[in-house]
Image 1 (spheres, rainbow, N blue to C red):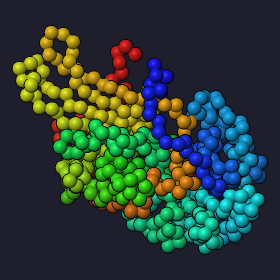
Image 2: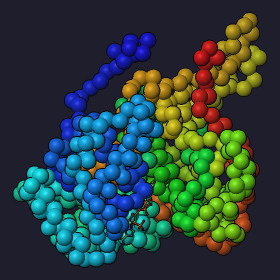
Image 3: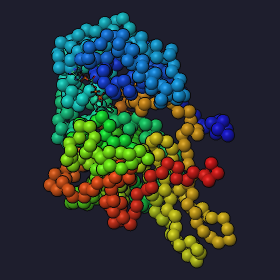
Image 4: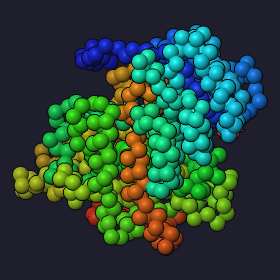
Length: 529
Ligand SMILES: NC(=O)c1ccc[n+]([C@@H]2O[C@H](COP(=O)([O-])OP(=O)(O)OC[C@H]3O[C@@H](n4cnc5c(N)ncnc54)[C@H](OP(=O)(O)O)[C@@H]3O)[C@@H](O)[C@H]2O)c1
């Protein structure tokens, strides 16, 4: 059956090419991100044949270690990654890893020391000569956000960001999150970066955009004929976007307690999902065409009651409970969290997009930690069809169609529709049609960073955030910060760990006669399966 399905797939286009010769310099080489995600992603790219043969990886960090120690540490984390998250559990491709490992170097330097950048520059020249990397460099800033601007400025001051039109030599910087902590700081960071780099050299990462389903959203909407004619306020009742995690703050208590759910998730991940869902068709797939349409959505996005933003959002904090049967301690007892913290670990809000397509139609967003399920999804709730034909039957309520795009962990698309329940009378049953990626395609082993790193090497910034989109995200949520500062207890309610959020989040929708979707994976799993 699966073979038949695969045979019927219409695969088009040539396979992707390996990236051009280049060096990746990772600042923060001793950190968690490098070990857990970036180097496993480079290893996966090597396995997929997408890393160039002329490639070097230079780790920069102030930790004292030899290159042998560094390589050994990376090998262990890639082996661990391959066992737990590889395409086939336990399959570690030693050949592919060896090729990556042979390219790994380590340079000990402090990010604040200008001499380190001089040494790095000299070393990059040597690498270009000895390894044929053509002088192309991706500088990956896998560092705390306070270093983003200082490192970029120091790289530029040392002449390391200079590109060459004649040879085509390029220099690019990948910036991690969080990009600012509010509108003013994001703006200031953009100004600092843009004072020494041009926008095309800056790749602001949002790893959500590296997920297959997020990219497939564009294909679903614009690569099919049946969805787009219905994709507007005339046919859709509302849209819900959920990003729920079962984990609490883990080891990030210090950062999270200063940020909270709103800053951590909404202006970046949730707004990215929202803008891809709501954007107009771009003229083409080029980075600027796509990003221009996305930012137009954000420019028109506002709280449903713009005069009272504080009434359009609710928040809460988890107290003790049980997540999937395991006892869970209260947020205030997590490591590095203040005992009397009022930081929200859950936020939900109602927004609208003030443009022709969406005017007046609500978008409900929610995200939280220590919730009942790990789940990210976009749910398009269509309007009820008219009752007319069923007036004199047993059907007293029509079923509204729903399209759910599952982003993680089990990627796919489901459609809910009404079907006749077998029997002599006319009764409607709700049924689901489910498409799971894994039924059709072999999942590429993925950390979520492969596409993004590869795209940066290829010079494709489509999946990265442009300066204007980051600033727009912050600008939208800014009124909430003000409202919450003025009234810290307003619309704040605790929820037990393991719940679907606080009661006031349900009330937010109940006031509109609506309800959040049940957090379920396969809403329409066949009774026979
Ligand atoms: N970890 C994740 O899963 C994750 C996910 C998404 C985004 N991010 C983002 O990625 C970035 C990096 O996160 P991370 O968790 O990898 O951080 P991290 O574990 O703290 O790594 C940063 C590395 O930089 C080193 N370092 C600190 N100050 C330095 C200096 N002055 N000179 C040279 N080296 C210095 C640190 O060494 P010490 O340990 O000795 O300080 C550490 O090895 C952050 O912006 C984070 O928000 C992380």
